[in-house]
Amino acid sequence: MRVADAEGVGALSMRRLATELDSGVMSLYRHVANKDALLTAITRAACEEHPYPEPAPSDWREAMRLAARLDWEVYRAHPWALVTSSSARHFSDTSCLDWMEDALVGLTDDPDLARSFSIAVWSYVQGVCIQHVSQQLLPGGDKAEQSPLRATEEDFELGLEILLDGMEQRAERAGAPRAGTGSARRFATFTRP
Amino acid sequence: MRVADAEGVGALSMRRLATELDSGVMSLYRHVANKDALLTAITRAACEEHPYPEPAPSDWREAMRLAARLDWEVYRAHPWALVTSSSARHFSDTSCLDWMEDALVGLTDDPDLARSFSIAVWSYVQGVCIQHVSQQLLPGGDKAEQSPLRATEEDFELGLEILLDGMEQRAERAGAPRAGTGSARRFATFTRP
DNA sequence: AGCAGCTTGCGTACGCCGTACGCATGGAAT
DNA sequence: ATTCCATGCGTACGGCGTACGCAAGCTGCT
Image (cartoon, rainbow over all chains, first blue to last red; front, side):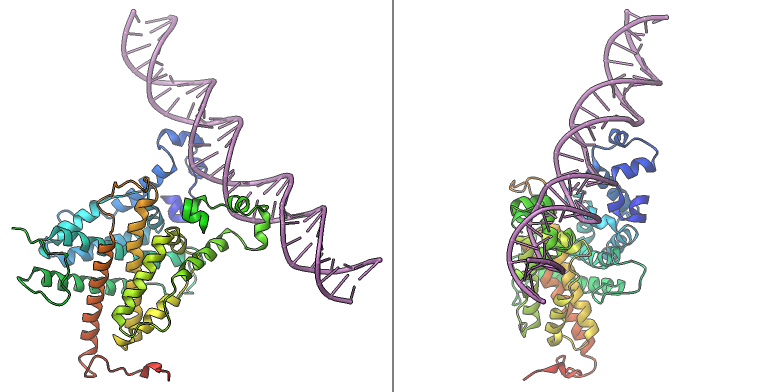
């Protein structure tokens, strides 16, 4: 993680890690199955630096904000975690989704809807972070040559609030006894006991 | 693009491309500066398969839906485009953002707000596509072993509507207090003949 | 004490990768 | 006829992930 933080995940090779640890290259394979496993491990470690608190805040909105902010902090601290966690095969972790889903019981009692909401929030966060991070990786980093499309932290939070507003609105519409307004969707119909 | 589509962008090496074209490896460098430039080129080509129409639909909501769907289709057809376009240094194209920003004049007359909205939509789309695509790349693809977190097309559209709802709400709130109707725009909006 | 079996470190080697360099060739311009 | 230059591409270098197998130490059993 130290190497990846300092020089990017591209600089983290097995040979490099070996010299860093004063060991032979192949010795590493006694502790790690292959390089993918290593990336998975450091990605998980990065995420666990900012774990979702248990139990989640009772206010669903606060919970979503918290989750988003924690993810944001992980990716700010370790930009490479975005590529490793997105590049498939690493870290197909559903625990964050589960946490969010739980935190949304105050909003809706439809688990499918909660799932979809969670996916939306999680996806949104991931997307903005990519936007934000991807720019400063190559061009020179320190330079203030901000490209105009770079998502700022303000954009991040505004978009999040927008998304949460939309969720609240949708949940009310679905949860209200009848509410059959124009946008009648099949989602969110199974209201169980 | 044929190779990347069929076997993933990882299979696309300069040597591979050379044999595919019955040419020497180094001959490729007469047409392309380096591999990054090649990836940028095919990414741009993929995006231009589904260009945003000009002019944009006058209904801002329809415009956003259209943009999102077009991107979705690009990434469905060419999953590798997600990694290449996200992996920085390729394709820092702001034209999509500009298009969205224009399309949002019907929603708000505040260009900063329109920018933030555009970033939010674009980020969300990118995020869901990553979620959707990243899973089917490695595990075996064809198999129906869907992991439960995999974003479906329904999730995609539901989340989008939620986001649009939130935008609408927020724009009304910002625009309503003054200026009477929400569609009053101070900036004259360059309506051409 | 001797031996067997196991874990661990790691040197070597293979087949990939991107690409720097420089030579050969053939057509266009003079 | 000569020059010039755009183009094709062979060779080579340094890097990568990792398969394979050997050597050395630790453990437990006779």
